[in-house]
Length: 290
Image (tube, rainbow, N blue to C red; front, side):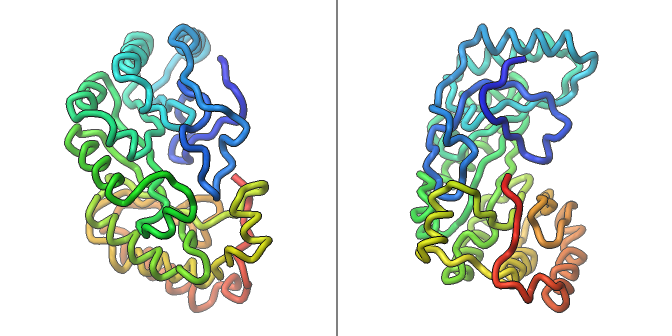
């Protein structure tokens, strides 16, 4: 199996076979992220991808879930990505699920017909970083995506029937823009209605632009109480059914379950944390690098 550099996968994909289809990220400018800073983006050649798929077949007698890495796998030309999906289908006939990283702008750039072809070929789920619904925050973090683009990408994904998990970062607006960040993020989520969501508490990654902004005072980290209050607002105002992956390792109150079934219970846990969790006495949340 060939993997170049550090390999990242979402925590819901812990049991999936990882196949590297791209190297790095097309944007690679987000101020909070260091996942791909050591890589220059490129698409792997089909022969290399196919070789890894064949090698994985020799290694694993049963594979029922596959996740394609690195970032922005959906930028691969549709005809080439279809060949990858077909290779997976013929090599792993027992496989039930194929997911990948695909930005909402990547969905926006493909036609609905192309996306329907990918769905028919076996693509079941895509993971996209929404990060925030606040236009100012999106600009500050250099996401390279507007709210309008995110809406357009989500509309195409839904039209094609591809499941979507959107991740976003509690506290990304900092201490000064916490309210605007969460209000606009929840407003956008209620429009988009993704199949699954993954809220994550802000982590200041070593060596990132955001870390330097923290050191210079340009970005003031939110308090743990603000992060909890953001999640409280989220749970109070989400109005669509979804899978809630709130159990990232850096979250103050790890929670996983379906909404709305678990919504009241999750909200109660957050309210209890706001009332009595020791972390609310801290100035900033201490977290671990990804």
